[in-house]
Length: 305
Image (cartoon, one colour):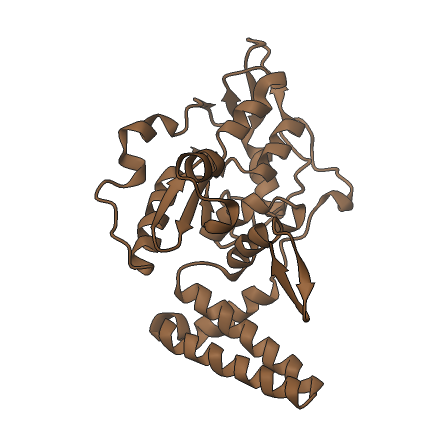
């Protein structure tokens, strides 16, 4: 389940699982009259983000957090899994498991090999490796050790896998594997208790490579920017960099334009981090909004309808 933290400018910041019903139908605001600030798969995280954004935008913070409202208490993870040393067993047959998994996105459980979490990426792995219980055909299971190896050889929140909903969950873990028990060996995921490690090399995945945004954050963190930095200072620096870009464009200085845009992206990356969000998330939120817009070009600028 996805929890949307939405903003109606000048009115409120709230949380909902259904934007069309809650914001558009019930409150009467069209798609261009509100924005989605964040998405979370965990109701408690959504409540924390709602309060954070309410303070950030100067709105009153709700007295009762979203996850404590009586109407939301039944939205927490419902699926009960049975965990043993070797397996995680799900309370439904394999042919009905995918729907259960999709309804419990964000659910976590502990095993001997670390903590597992359901994301769009891990759902694919589970469905590929699920087995029917020999004792009860209404139950299905996966091997914990094999699941842990999947984490060790893949990014469970893989941005390159096309699962944009997982990006926000990946932010919470900073790209680190949750079940890191065998990360040193980098054992190919196709090996399990019944299949010795005779896999072909191509099955072993490389760890996720750092992005340019990751490198920028490392650079800034090493210099203490996140510990002692001030969002107001960074915002002013952004204005300065935009001014440099404008001057370079007027002078038709291509190299300076490139340099200025790069500097602005660095500042934006750090500004986002100081505000408690990732630049990738901000880009995703913005794209979700603009991808729905219609309009036309007027005097060199796209004017939305």
